Length: 504
Image (cartoon, rainbow, N blue to C red; front, side):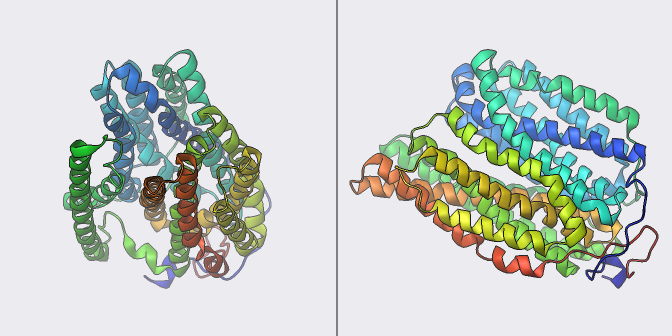
């Protein structure tokens, strides 16, 4: 990559006086934030609803799990191609497409007569959701000047924190009062309003390209990323099928599916990367991998990968530990996690301002220390740990994550030239999906395996569950250790004023 393709990582320039954004640009950011909030809110409501859907629709737990697996698979397939789509089509067209797909999927889900239609609805919903976050990130990077990106990314962290905090609680309330359909019914009018207002106010940002889409790259991407995520979702898939011959057969089938899926995914991903390296020579790549020529971007992505592996795995094990070992209800579990999510969201704008003024290290170093320290503290949790201790620990962990996510998002994309923002956003989204799937699969499998082994050796069930959780948290803590090194290496890209050359 030429020197002008990467922003310098050397310092700051003076901040010009006046408003950061024009009124119409500010409206676009707020509309995209609102749409992203609705999409993420919807995504986080389904987990609580699965037990209710099993009874209401008369389906098995394995079938019900496809409502989340299909959503995750669709995201994994579509996010990698959003880099091309955001350069090929206008901002307005992408927003209308994303919200139309999401709204249509939500309507189908609300009216679904049975499982099959509901599954299709989830795929349609995910198609819109997959576009929304890369669109938000790319638009923000395009219209917000470098010296103010931290505070704007802080607003993104509010969306990413508050929606998951509200989602499970809202879902639980609706399930207990009016039924699962209203999980979608409450979201639908909000989505339609966002679509209507966005169609009226959002205008086109940046320039589009006329390059044709490479169908082979799309196919390889779908099999590569989809195969990996689906394979990872099958880890531990033999559990829950009873005992004896049936359980053995189910376990063998799941193992075969896992091996085939991961093999197909790895081969297709290798071919996808090879094809992108060839096609990017003429700027025709579906996902331009020249973004990794920026050392700062690559370091930030590495840090984000480790963070996603450890965090998403640990945050999935925590409610399992609380409900299986501490014997607390799903509602109590949600309330324990809520303060941390609120703290993470509310701290976002302040952390963004600190990033704009002082850079990455003042945030990443303490953030990494807090995150790693709390994951190591989680290894001490047992069947006697008070719930209030976990609530405090989760809140402290969330603050550590807040200190990490905003500077990583901003520094990674800020290290690229504008023409690579869409590809950088796609890489970020893909990394979060795949690394999160790896972390969840790994830690949940470790927890289940250790607990089952301990119980088979004569350990009481609750104590065995505690051992499983401790081992899973230990793996997350070990995975997180490189964060302490990466925090010192990642730097804030120099703020370049509009119109100045990238080498300024």
